[in-house]
Image (tube, rainbow, N blue to C red):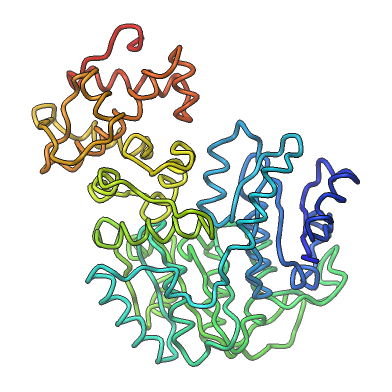
Length: 472
């Protein structure tokens, strides 16, 4: 039997549902956040978390799993109408997302098949692609740094893979057999962060019924990774500085200093030097953290990683079933996009593509890029630079039909932003052409009618012909 922890404080599973899971070989233990014990987490082989309006519960469970060095997959349950929350959950590490609606045995069967096909995370380098020369140089440098037991600061934009690089540093070091404990400094309130990092003694505050070692202690002999270090409060920065200086920690409510044998890796997407100038980050802590500094570039600066990352993600999602693939036109569209959200955004776009393609090869009309990128590129680009030319990229039959019907020009090869706008234009026009109303088209695209109206207005401003029925 597979042990499964089920977090849902609103609606417990019914006996028939529990029986169905038992028939599939799953032993369900239903708990809430207050009942979460490390021993229970250690034995769990799968976690199911119900999310309401945010991914906070997902982050809390991930932090506790990291603390006990568990790699159990997490399945997030969200309302069917809350598409964006589901995307965020996938982006932040959920293996799969399923609806909180009426129990659907077919849906759960697919999720369980995916969980069984999920490979164990035993090698960090398999989760990071080093195809681009820039990435290869970074890997070579990281492996050299890993051999020296120094504190490392990893910098880079959000979603670029800082935690993955931290895991590579751990796996390539002499501490690889020790624990790797990851913690997001921006994920929780300050008092909870302090308790989780430093631990507490029994009776140190109301509800402290037992001794609880902190994450620093739990990382003994291994590595602790402090993500989003730039978000840590000034008060906690002072305590962290003392730990780095003394290599010891005192639990909340305790008096005894506990010696630490750990390596500290921190990461941030903020400019810490600017934060020092603004007096929001301690200068002395900055120099303690930067014994060595590694900068991970954005995805746009390592373009040869884009398609290998996409192939890797699609391969992971397809498991042992038929392999999902991208058409050549879709590959060109991915390569030409600027990826402000980096690897996380790439995964989001591919998730949407998988949903829209519905098992077929993912084509350009299935690639929906984030709204923020389109609005940014349109607002900053002068109208006289909006140049279009016939693209030499091959088109599928459906795209060619749409192209001839709407007579829209394709992006010039030298205009990367135009390729992005063209792929979104194709998705919008394809949805409109196959829908009875604008509202129905917006639903197919996974956006609101208001957002669709805004996009159509943008297209008209570029001189693209949009019929009045859809331009309202």
